[in-house]
Amino acid sequence: MKIQWNNIGNVDFEKLDTYKKQFHSVVRLIAIVEKGITDCDPNSIMLTWLPEFNAVSTHKCDSSGHSFKLAVVPEDLTLLLIRDNQSIENSLSLDGVSQREAYEWIKSEINLVGIDNRNLSEDLPFNDESFNIDPDLVYEIESKDSGLELTKYYSNAFELLNHFKNKRDHTTELLISPLYLNLETSFPIHKNSESNLSIGFSPGDKFESEPYFYVSRPSSEEVLNNKLLPLNGANWVKEEAWFGCKYSAKVFSRTESQLEICKDFLHDGQGYIKAISA
Image (cartoon, rainbow, N blue to C red; front, side, top):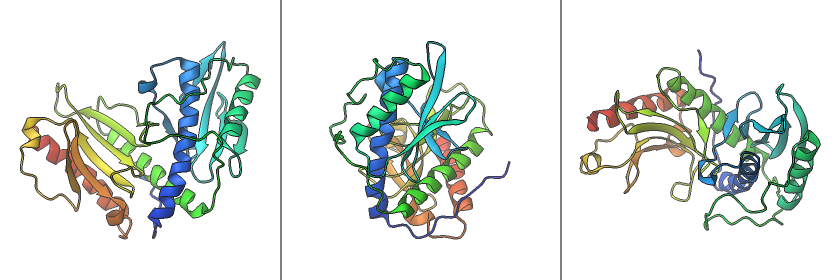
């Protein structure tokens, strides 16, 4: 299947980072819903990408014979309530809306669907002091270009990662972490291996401001002590629990062959990590 790739032009990473922080708060807001409805371990909550809506979404939330998905569109920060038939039941543009108002809208919509909303907590399902959310925060879309670029990154990442996922057996579902916003899939490094190799995309974090693709595996002495060769302009990262290479947008967004160089990076990165993990 042909990979659908949206060409990414010159990006103002500072504006993108500001926009991403607002998007991040909405993503955590819908994660509260998945936690409240499914009553799962907060640390196990993972979201997904809906390509038909270009949105980050909860998995199907079921209760009392009713079900729905709650999603947020990164392009314009619109909340979507989606029913079983994949139709949009209702939507709310968050431009000019406070987080508190957005949360009240969510609770009201869930109630209208027929699901008891009393299990929804006011607290975020994550203990992360680096990202405290003000319920009176008012969402403001100052640059629609940033929302469009963020959507392109996720859409491209979903297409490219899905391409590799479909070529392998025993891969995990493509999932988005509400804590880090990364989209990722993983599979055993070698046949019958207990360690997984992960390939993914991050829109940027506190260590790397630009979006990036990555290939990683859990750290161990065998890889931490290895002398690493350069790989397609990627940055190698060695941490106590994480080892891998990152390929940032400052490299791949400024070339005409964006799809091919990102595909080559993910392919070569997997091969390299496998080789040094033998």
